[in-house]
Image (tube, rainbow, N blue to C red; front, side, top):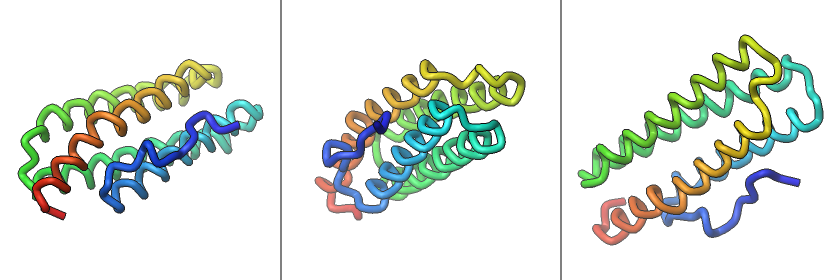
Length: 135
């Protein structure tokens, strides 16, 4: 069973970002499945790196879009991105030192953060961008 089921409730009305959100959900689910399945670090390590890389790339593309459209909520939104990136970096650092550091609690944090962020902060940006006709 997937940890984070993709559904239309995660669509914010910006196709490129919706695709990236779907990809992030998939990356969380693949890491979850590998950890739950007891996969080796040679499998789970690259999945964690990919999730972190995809997250950084997604945040960057969002912030570029926000800057270009002069989104008034950019600064706060970017601060929230930095918070998650710091958490991701901490997960990666702990994981590189200890097999058991990436566990279900870490994944639940990521799942909840991604879901909440998409459904509130990203949705607000999507609504603002669509309302202002800046696509």
